[in-house]
Amino acid sequence: MFKSKIAGIGKYLPANVVTNNDLLKYMETSDEWIQERTGIQERRYAHRTNETTTTMGVEAAKVAIERAGTTPQDIDFIIFATLSPDYYFPGCGVLLQRAMKMKEIGALDIRNQCSGFVYAMSVADQFIKTGMYKNILVVGAEKHSFGLDFSTRGRNVSVIFGDGAGAVVLQPTEKENQGILSTHLHSDGNSAEILAMYNPGTHANHWSEQKLASFDEAEIGQMFFSHAMIDDGQVFPNMDGPAVFKVAVEKFPAVIKEALEANQRTTADINLLIPHQANLRISQFVQKKLQLRDDQVYNNIMRYGNTTAASVPIALCEAWENGKVKDGDLVCLAAFGSGFTWGSVLLNW
Ligand code: ACO
Image 1 (cartoon, rainbow, N blue to C red):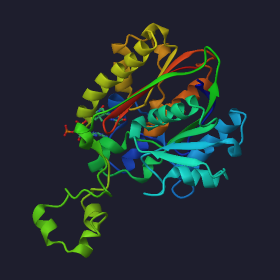
Image 2: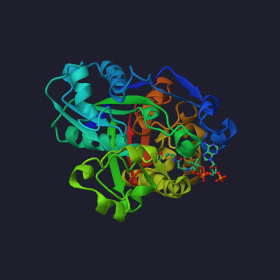
Image 3: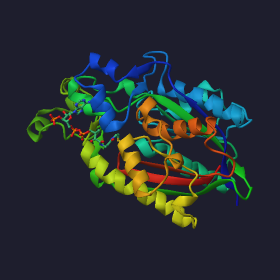
């Protein structure tokens, strides 16, 4: 059986840098508050009209495909992870396929928020291992700046997120010291609403029973998305930050240890851990708990904020470009996020 190797990696960050102080134009916050709680100094926001989640994914994919020594026509499967798609449907995978003039290959969108890229890598790995596909494009991309509450009401969430994209091309390898060793996926839906964007959706718990009873069929058709939802600010992400923190610092180390134990490795063997860039405080907590040195953990949330499904490939790409990942290195990718869902990928570069 084959293993999957990352044959090429790319990233795309929009040019528009937004500092913490820039956010003061819209909400009551401070550079000090944001840096102290999250480590973030600045993030990138996509161009309002010219850049979408898909276009950023395309830019990252172009680099990954070229670095893999392939062309868009060689790609035989697309997996696109995002929580901020261009359209509610269809997904970004087909839009990328069209933009890159790819063949009539399968395109799968993954809705696993912060752990979307790790889930996507795991799915791609299964297809490569069985020999079904030979050049899978895996993309993580987000345009958060279009869906955040920039008033003071939404500041606990909006200061955290940024835009960007990362992509890899996975190919089969038979080399001894190269490729994905294992992937580990988990979920616990009991806390689904702790970190969630409820609308538009088919649930109706934003209306009272009394109000629901007064709707006729035609009005019910409008419940998916209504003026009232917008007026009430029910169209933005919700997060109970302290509750997320509590679970994240438990699940992150556990899923990293799980990957190491499955391959008879220890934390000392890790050359580089790429944690999902949720919050610098979470990464530091995980590092401490696993007793990892600074040079074993890569963080760039300071410059890009939390880019959810894009954060792991952007960080991995940047680390590789900076010479921090070399052939044969043991690299662990780990993510935790909304759902809750979490997972890890252990690989030799
Ligand atoms: N600027 C200034 N003040 C703020 C801001 C802001 N941007 N946001 C919230 N506050 C205020 C609140 O209004 C509140 O004020 P009050 O005490 O007068 O009522 C106070 O700060 C504390 O609010 P909390 O929401 O409890 O903020 P907390 O101290 O928990 O910090 C944070 C928020 C940073 C999100 C924290 O909960 C955390 O680190 N959570 C971990 C989860 C996380 O990082 N999620 C990121 C995305 S999810 C993921 O990727 C997995």
